Image (cartoon, rainbow, N blue to C red; front, side, top):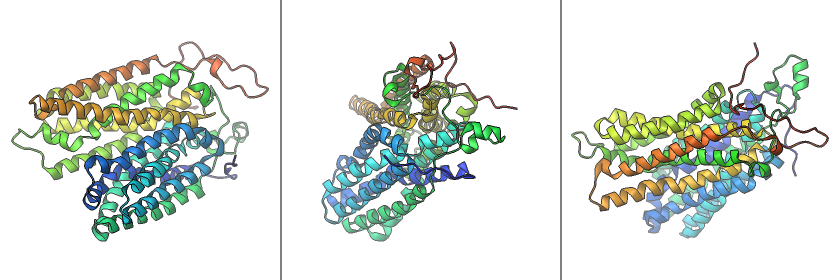
Length: 460
């Protein structure tokens, strides 16, 4: 077990979000993998399914490493976790570079997908617990800042990777050089986060006696404190798992097939959507995804976590209904509804750590968050499967345009309503699940009817 780096007196908590961003902006490159697909297919003679394998394995390993490594991250602290993420993510690119230059595709899959995917998972959860402890007054905003970086990483990586391939060439040697530059650059950038991150050392009682803000010095745990092992035994964890899975499935339903979807919807209209316009639509969705991570998670600090998930799931279902019924009649309506859905997709990721903190406390929130991310892995398979399978079956039945997606949108609406119902069933965790430190008395039983997500009341 390593000792986390403690913040010295006078350390500003506002230095921690940039440390988290340096990691999340780096690993967010995963969303830009599609840039490498056409060159790999051409240089190594791969199919589209084969060229997608490194990304798919990376997302699977993200969920698995976050779930199984969450306890280690919680035990050893953020600097250890960021260091592991740095080594794995950068090494993944270096192995992929070796695979490209030797034209051994299995090595690209192993490097980027398996080794790099471990870096994705550990890096994704590395700052969450620390940010929540530094910002007990605004946990949604704090985690939103970091997780926004994962959504925005592709906005940097996509044009950067494209420019490198244009300069180095799209043969196996050029791809290898691009992978090599990625690995070295991200190692340097993530090192900034490793060196900068600190955990809070001040006590609330001492800060209160001096009249200082508890949030500026960190806080001792207050409220329910539940271990990761015990959290898995609560209905609240599995209800929230279902909520996240349904919300992510609905977002991926549009994100994974965005360009062909908008093209199909307006193919038979007087103003069809061009290929560049479809690409611009994808960029808009990425921006909405990133903005929603900060905007909606910050809103949850004001209106409460349960209320903001009511918005994600209830209004999200309404947006899908509007697209299904009227989407082909108006491009602005289609685009606006899709942007709202993708903002909810990003917001759901960024808000869930704060929701976990409300329910289970800060004791092992990082480890609990890691286990919850298996919902993401499930949704990553479920969402594309629903949309693509339904579209293929509808096309085989002779349908085209919006008719390809009507049934899948109905399924998405149903899934969102299931998530909405699960969110309504979430209640405070019973005191029997609380972690009691040695020598402490029994944990207090939550007041009947008290919501776990009530917006914080600020002292005058």
